Image 1 (cartoon, rainbow, N blue to C red):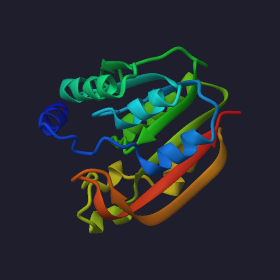
Image 2: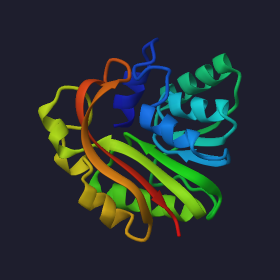
Image 3: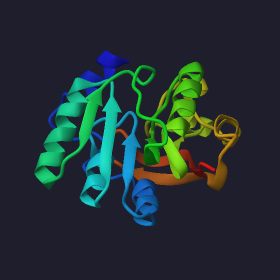
Image 4: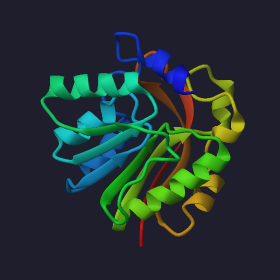
Length: 198
């Protein structure tokens, strides 16, 4: 997967666009800026948006090409982000250090997902939030992005299980139209979640 993402991100254009994910931007706008961690951040569109709105940003991805483009975008927008190239299972941040951890189309095999999501909860301060948007299994019928392996897709049941100790502020499955660069374009089946660490 590492080589797949390096190859995908090595083209000149921003393949998922330079604008943030709509749901992520909406949710962030409701919060007072603080510290945010963005796993699997790719080309940096969400990290740069957060930094532009006063957040202190830590991001990671397994792709060096993604990091390079993220830092270019940050420079273009006149903001600063911390971005490390690291495997999701290896990366770590201090416990109770983040106000938000946002998973935007961060898809993993089930065992990895469980480990990464559990780790993310420990990074959150009490009262901190998980913001998540990802594809659900109905997305397999669409040609608008996401993994073709059903085990890597999210359902409401998976989210309830993985984030079992959190208070659910929002959890919904919906069909929507994405317009996020050429790989997320058109009718898509997704799940959205906002959870609060109690």
